[in-house]
Each structure stands twice: as structure tokens, then as C-alpha cells.
Length: 236
Image (tube, rainbow, N blue to C red; front, side, top):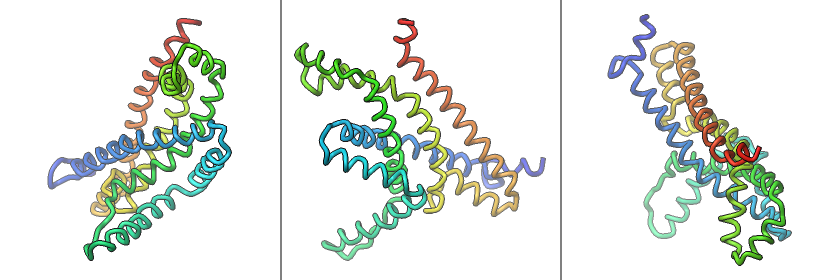
């Protein structure tokens, strides 16, 4: 029971620090998701465009960010972005600027997420009959209307399962940002166990928090998947 007292709120425990770290972890994952999805969709569109140069560029992009370790990508974005930004600012002033760790983490994780998401979207595109685009054109729709009203709803339905798995991976990979001193759940756990000399206890607490986040996500994503696939159930 003395160990459990380490989870007290306030100055005598670490509960508030762990809660703040959990909240930052969730915010980082939620901020990364739309960024990664948008880039992933653009890369998938490039692959499906039929234009050789766009296809080649998209394939190079996915090869790079699927092949690099996520931690190395984070270091490159964080330190490389710092150098690039400092040189840019140095053209106008001698002021020192520092890359925001949250933004760097979001960009790095988003690039990796988008590379995998593009493969999910590319596979989903192949599941949409080509004749539907021709039918939409025959109905007088322009390319944007055909994509928004015909292709996109089916794309979401076909890709939701793969994207759900990628979200769960993203949620866990947010722990990497602790190496750039961002106060996420893992960093606050490291601080807590270093201060109390109770590594097993605090890492077990962090494990349970990540597990709860994953379970909540799984339930939510399952409900979303059931919703977008409701038409299939009625047809069946």
C-alpha cells in the first residue's frame, strides 16, 4: 500500500504528472492522425494517377518512410528541422529559434503513418470498380464530385479496418517523443520511477494506461467500422 501512495495527487504523488503525460500522448496522436491521413491519401492518389513521375515519387516516399526506423525519422525531423529553421531565420535576424517538440513529433510520426496509410488507401482504390467513375461522368459529375460522392465513401469503407490498426500502432509510437524531452506518458513515467526507485510499479502503471487507451480506441473504432459498413449488412 505504501507503493500505491506514490499515485497520490499533488506534491506527494505522481498521479497528476502521469495524467498530464497521458493527455499529451492522446493529443499528439489525435493531432498526428489527420496530418498522416491527408498525406497518405495524396500519396495514394499519386500512385493511382497513372502518371509515371507521380507514381515513382509516391513509391520512393513510401519506401523511405516505411524503411527508416521511426526513432531515426524523429531525430531527423527534430534536429534537421532545427538546423533548417535556424538557417532560414538567420537570413533575416540573429535570433535563436527552437523547433517545438510537439510539432516535430507530430510531423515525424505523421510521415511514417502516412507511408503506411497510403498503402491501405492504394489497396482500397483497387477494390472500387473502375466503371463507377465512368458512370459518375455519364451522370454529369466533374472529377471532384465523383471523388467526393462516389469514390470517397467506398474508400473509407474499404480502408477503415487497416486504418484502425494503424491508429493503434500510432498511439503506442507516441512514446518515442520522450527522447526529445516531450513530457508524454513515457517520459513522466521515467521521471517518476527515477525519483521513487520503483521502476516495476510505474512501468506497470504506464502499461495499464496504454492498454486502457488501446481498449477504448478499439471499441470506438469498432463502432465507426460498424457504422460505415452498415449498408453491407442490410444487403446481406
